[in-house]
Image (cartoon, rainbow, N blue to C red; front, side):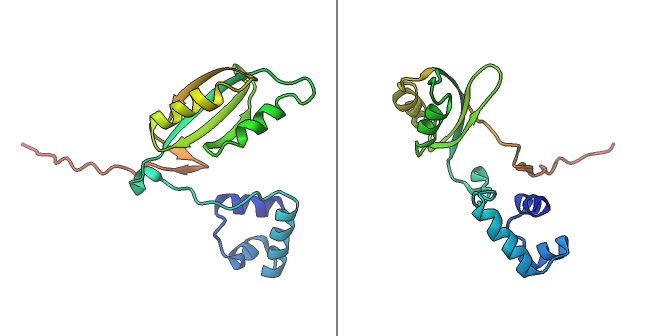
Length: 159
């Protein structure tokens, strides 16, 4: 199962026949394994990694570090689930180190994200403080490089 999951993590669009050949199984066996993995919650979905900048579509992303006050009965889970419920929130991670939760937000503008943090995230009772950093450029995500090599079009003149 682990081999299958690793293959799908790298490229979920591979034809089942190719995956079957890689795993030395039949396509029917691979399809059954994929169904089992989805039923058990190993596979949470399939998604395309979009380079919005390359596509010419304005998407602003921010990483927000949160200090929160966990509840005695549920720890960090309760506040993390509330934050995860916001449509603007892409990712919520419980962290070790200097802050408690890392939240990744996507929006159409810096102002939209700033207003979300100021009006919806910061006022939550369990949020003690926030620190927002805007993503300026993505170089690598999910193991894939985003920046194509730039072609050096300078000419060299030899005298």
